[in-house]
Structure formats: C-alpha cells, structure tokens
Length: 428
Image (cartoon, rainbow, N blue to C red):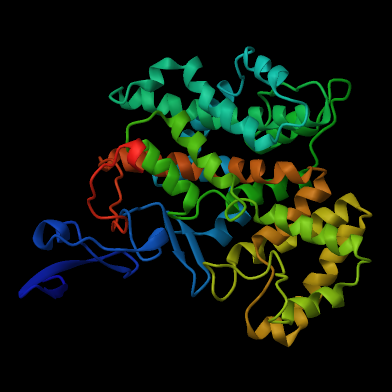
C-alpha cells in the first residue's frame, strides 16, 4: 500500500496520497484537498509545488545531476548531435539510424521561412531588441499556418506544427542577428546539419562560401544540448500554462520566450558580460571586485557563479568549460573582457571563500564567454538561450497535451477589503 499523509483539520482526519517518482522523489497529492476541507495551499512562486508528473527531465540540484529521458547530460553533450537530443526529448528514446535520417530530413525540409516575414524586419525599429523581435515573429507564425489553431487536429498535424517551429526557429534567429548588424539575410543550406546550418546562416555572407569551423560548431552543439530542457522552470511553466488553454504551439512558445526575457531567468549570461564590462571600465582590478563579492555589506554579486538550483556544482559548467577553452584557443581572441573572465574563473576556483560556499562558475558564465568570443552581441545571448531551450518547451507542451492536463488555474488567499457598500461619487 502506498504511503499517505494525514492532515488533521476542523476535527477531521484527511488522508492524502504520497506520489513516488522513478528516482524516489516524493510529493503529496492534494488534488482533493479543497473538496475535502475547503482549504487551498499557499506557496508563493510554487517553490514547493509540483505542477505535473513528467518523463522528460530529471534534475537533482543537491547532487549536480541532470538527465534527459534517463541519459546523463555529460554523455549527451559529448556524443550526441543537437538534432538527436531534440528527437529524444520529443519521442522518449534516441533515434535509430533510420529514424534519425527521416527526422533530420523533416527538419531540413521546413527550414525556409515565408518571404513575407521579411516585412516584419523592415517594420522593426533599427535598435529594436532581438527578444522583442523573436516573440512577435514566433507568435505570428500561427497566421501563416492557421490550421495550427485547431486544438483537436490529428497527431500527424500536431507533429507537423512542432517540426515547422523547430525547423524555422534557427532561420529566424539568424535573420534577427543579420538585422542587428545590417547585413543581408542568408538562406538555409540543405546539405548542412542543424547546428552548422544555423552558424552558416548567422555568420556566412553572400559573397563568401566559407565552411563552418568544426570547433565552433561543436561548442554551439554542446551549448544547445545543455540548455535544451531544465524541468519545470519559469519559461517552461509559462509555455504549459498558456498551452493548457489549448492555445496553439506558436502562441504558447512565444509566451515562454517572453518569460525567458526576464533578467531573473534567461538574462543570466548577459548579466555576466555586463559585469565583466563594468570591471574592465573600472580598471580591470579583479581582486577589488572579488573582495567586494566577499563583503557581506556590499550589494555587489558575482554573476555567473553558483546556481539557485544546483547547490553543489552545475554539471553543465564542467562540460562547457572545456569547450570555452577550445573556442578561445581556436579563435585566438584578444579581448580584455575575456581576460578578466579567465582571471575571475581562476581566482574563484582556487579561493577558499568560493570553494567553501561552492560558488563555482556556472553554465551562464561560460556560455557568455563563448558567445562573445564567437562575435555575438550581448543582446543576442537570451535569443540563443531560447534556441537551445525550444526542444524542451515543445516536448513539455506535447507531454501536457498527451496527459490531457486541465487548464491551469492557481488559487489564492484573498487579503483585500471585506464587503462594503458603494458610495456615490458626490458623497465620497
């Protein structure tokens, strides 16, 4: 017999079942709490509330564990392509060679974006933020594919909608980058893999057919895999709560992008580079800023160190540190900001203050370094985060639909005025 929790309230005893996950995670099932007692739970920010069961991602912040569908993130980042990970998140297993060939072909066949999308870029102000562009374009895709609005369409039609979004997203992101630097857009190449095609459209130009550097492609592949899903985070939860109303996938993901735009969520790697710029502009004295970080009376926080979920170490940072070193060596970048980053990294990894508090560099620290070395402006960092996280959003949206999850509708505890009579304006 499964465990239960007994709640004593108002002279009654109510038994609530305990749900046990495949990794022995435990949660109290309170679905019948309000009907039985009239009570709701109060949990600001849902820090202790499980909104769903899920088979997609397992995360243990205490032990530094991250797995997609049971596969350790370390093995996937080292051995898999991003397209394989997309398939894994969507379908539950890594593809066979035959399945991968078909899936990769499906992705390739839908990379072109409708030419009318160019008109969106013409209308945007020259200094418009890349995330604002991304939100509006992704949402607008539903106007190009109105069949996606039908919540009762077939499984095959749903798969087509997911494939279209996953295929067109890199093209849209590359166009946003080109818009920002005033260059003509590049069209996708069908003979390139998912990541190399994105890099070709982003950094290629119409007068040069240069090949994509394998070191850069490998680093980008790892970064996208490391960001592909992260359980029920803010943006993923947003995608799902919007999707729970049976809003179409494009609208749901657009809402998730908006959530990711917030500086408390997707802006962490941007905050790292802004911090490094501030240190450079202050003279580049890293010891001064490390001392400020140690001073409990100083409001300065060292961005990119430690993690609110991973209490020991961020497993993704261990993987991407090696890629960051390879990219910097390959590109031979001379950049005082990146020099400061390396000084901070060395100091934090060897300083007892940071080691004792487990304030090690996290994935945001290294991803910011890599993106800057590649030549991305800081405003593009969160867009690149969205490119990586898209498969997780789509997979979580699909799982929510498969589970027939009811529309999201959190409760509240009202703390306003009690009932009072209306007083006419003249008498107030």
